[in-house]
Length: 515
Image (cartoon, rainbow, N blue to C red; front, side):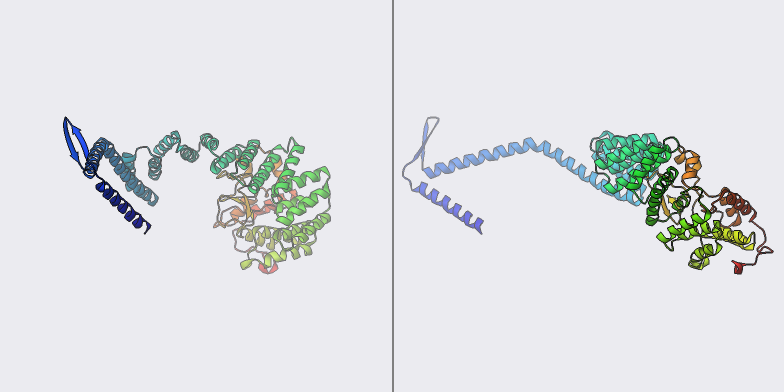
């Protein structure tokens, strides 16, 4: 409404002005080439306006003609860009859908219309990956790494390709180059995992500090990674630098109180120094956070020379801290067997047998029952029955990482290289063979004595002997801590090898009723 009023006001003002000029007396005289022309002011004003309009039209046409070639080139570029972006859209959709033929066609069209644009190179790389052409993929990522806009993306692609072909040095070089450009979470994690895989724990700790300073990880994550790395460094330094190792492990416990390897390392070291009260307090706190057989093993042996009765009392102390827990029951049962308190052992084992679904106790429970039967009644059919049941029993909890199950904790996964990948949990019923840590590069820098004294290992030959009992389920079982004394370990391993009997029932086997 305001615009209409303004327009009307302007028209009225122009009409008033023209009327005023027309009412003015006098003439306008124009002399051109000696000839004088007289006219009214209104006609003279109209002539000036017409000449000005003519000049404006001429100049506009001249400008249009001069800019016409540039306009045509711009229109051609716009059409090419439109076709190129359409090809990019089709190519991305085709590559995501796994349509290699259309992806290649769209990639060629995009390269034709757009050239080496970032998205064009990305589509080219995706198409090469879809086709399985690793050489072409690396070549494309190398071109991307040469462009400032796509340098980080190219370095990440080269990093992934280097890891795919197993070139750890090249993958680390690309990750470090990307990390210098920008604080990227993937690059910082890759640098950390590389130093961990190389067992360069000091450099790995520096990488954690850098990642925290650049805010690619939060403080709780940094504290957990520090604890894992300090524990690994303590295990490596234990044989020659015991004090430094204890200091590092103590720092790890303060950063992550639930980290079992750190707690057991500190508890054992403090026990050897004679600081039994502090060691017991630390181990009891770790047991409250999460009962674990390694903690029980260290706690029961914290004071050398203790009698079997003293060890039983310690086990009962742990049981009071975590009543009805599986590890509490097993710790009390084993200590009671060693103290020849068979009634206490049976009472402790009863919940583990009665509460299991389908009356299928775990392998460690079956092994403990076999040891109990033999210790109380000697070699009998009940012993062989429990050994046979152990070969088919459900798995106990173990350290699991990326589908690998192990009795021994490690700082990182031997499969993916991820730091702090091992989780104490019940593994699936079907897994690959148990990982042998003493033969794995993860523990190459650790002496066997350090590993054997830090984390107890299963009896030699028990895995294979039990696997022989069941040809349908040939997988080795987790029997860590099945026997405590060296004599019992040797005797049980021998009996296990003899337990693969061909008959369905042994002559003196009384059957399940006696168990």
